[in-house]
Length: 147
Image (cartoon, rainbow, N blue to C red; front, side, top):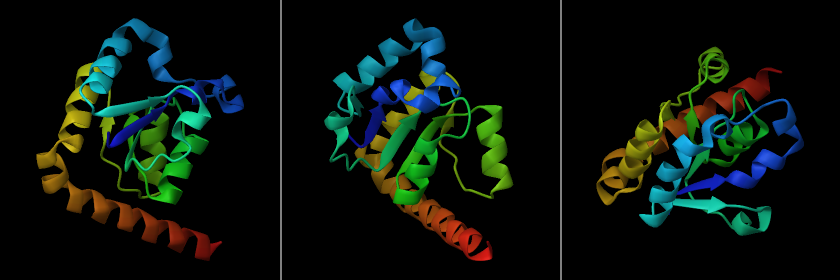
């Protein structure tokens, strides 16, 4: 699977103040997540040791606000596929990040993950994803040198 979901992060201390959207309506999200796992598109980690050697280039995020996990993804070169909340969209715009893989519904999530994980998706979107990653890295490096 090219996409991983670190579901165990719902138990992080941060989750006490920064909720995850899929938990607000579990019944709506579970069939989509299960279908993506069964199709080989998604790996779900129920505990940290399940993803210690996670090399998936994409990470599924459901945080309500900017999270440590989002920042970790950007810092390590993982492309986030994220639930597009107003606070995250504001953060992305304010920091001039190039993140376009957001979703609002289980159907949008399924289409996005399948598109990015398919051989055609990797071939057609791989270069664009790499260029976006490099742009974000460059912007991040400029931001740290200004401080």
